[in-house]
Image (cartoon, rainbow, N blue to C red; front, side, top):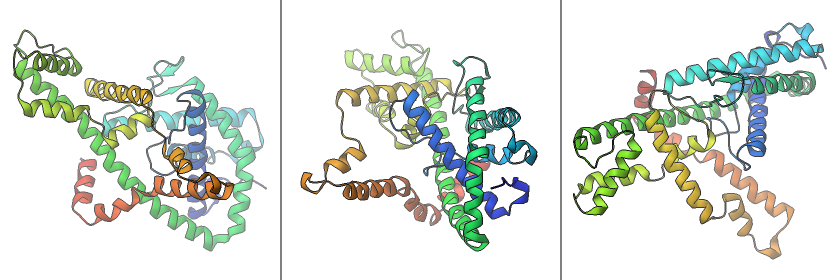
Length: 338
């Protein structure tokens, strides 16, 4: 089957190709991070669903290449490598400008550019481009041709609606994450203003400030205001939104709010170490463990696993009713745009 350039496709087919590339990218990220970085399953990407849109955009950019390159190996590899690297660099730059956060950081990887891209990932993008164009794309074109224009339009509109819900919820959480960084910085400044002249107070970083205040409170030499101690306690607690992004992006950092980010990562790592000392079954393990031994079968496990995936990916979509039925949606959009 001949590979069709993106400019020869209908808008609905092009969108479905974008979604398929995004899913392939998500699978690649999960496998790479699971095998070589975290050694466990991590739902990569910003969105709740199994999508990494950056790969979708990268794939569409590759499909803008002249069709004569699709039958080659080295030119296609080099073109995929360069184009996807450019997409990754500018995606990182745009996200940092919007949310003051560098979501992935290759600073410790050799031959990187500003920590946004590196040679290793560029080479992997080149191989992924070869796989998608030379092997996957012919089958994708065949599937799109077989379902026809009407069903392609229906599928595209349904997926678009779900994706818009996902993007809305994700943007809201990204704004919350950025707000948390700002509030932690302001909290640190208020501590420095209040206790900066005290001999026992250490104010080089927010972590040192909090540690010195907790030590002073425990010593009994100076009783710290209960409300302040309660604020410190809340800061150290687990927050689902913050936990979600720190888990998915282990190398995350912020040039604008470095101390705030370091504090969040510090408490996140402490909670992870504590969880290793007192391990609890994962959601998937709990699903298996709740099945009576006499009823265990491939069908039962498959049914439970599918139910888990539906709950895992759709739980946040239910919140959309609440988001769209209140002024929070308008408020969130306003904050994001400003």
